[in-house]
Length: 91
Image 1 (tube, one colour):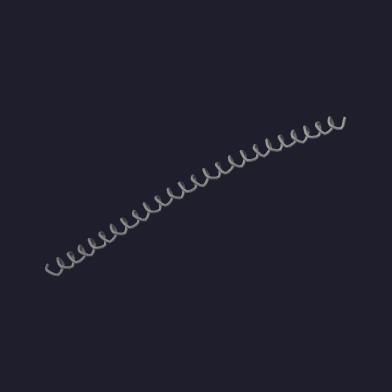
Image 2 (image 1 turned 120 degrees about the vertical axis):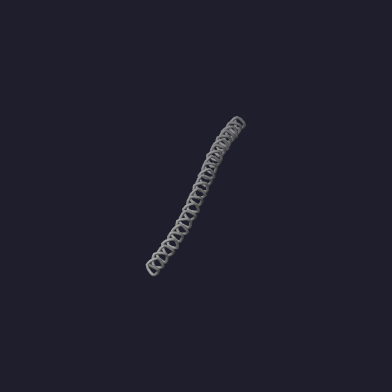
């Protein structure tokens, strides 16, 4: 009689432990999926930041090119002004 109750108690204990292990396994799997998702999110943010970095680099190069173009026009207008003054001075 008491052996039967003891066996039944151990059986319930092992069943409970099995359910606990199964629950812990599912929890571990959920955390694993969460960390994978977080890693993919960090990778996506990193790629986005890299794209913005490339965009800002391109914009900086464009501004530099426009600055050089403006300087060239400024030199051209200065040269044309000197030419006009020279022409007016010689006429």
